[in-house]
Image: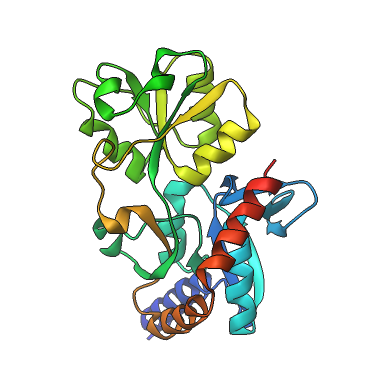
Length: 263
């Protein structure tokens, strides 16, 4: 009897440990380090839990709209990219709103809402490099190219013939430093992030490709969606209703505002 009671208490402890969110709150996980989608600020945005500073950016604007639509209070937790899905499935956060693409691999462990932004994949190079005039992926043959760990961008690099695929890094400030210092020739990014980087650093320049000359990507790879636990189907449907009420003009205005306000 004592043994069974002990097992029951242990099981109850595990359940309670996983229930870290309040039903009146929407706890959102994101890096707060991926401008213009999200970044850390000293005074503007939503206060980051268990850390100093505030989180701001396009994702935070979308998160606030969703929280308001759900009649919940928005809470933000800053989590490294590789830890976002584990944090979601462990119950530490309710959703991920972090510029995440709904790839088939990720769908094996989480579910996704409809898209809330659509972008394209580009390259960022040094302004004084020979790659500024690149027009296609062929121009990056034998170049040393890098991307963020665990992302679509890193998976795209092998599409470049004879590329020197550098070991991925954990965040974009590290990628910027790699290219700025000349250790790598280029890094892969989606358009808003590349605009964010090049607008704030004159030593870097963005390379865009005409249709058919750039990366071969699936439609799901150029969109971003909210990630949820697979059994949170009702919440997913509610969020989809909220996203459907946000027109394309408003989404673009939010992104332009994020680009102008980024640090």
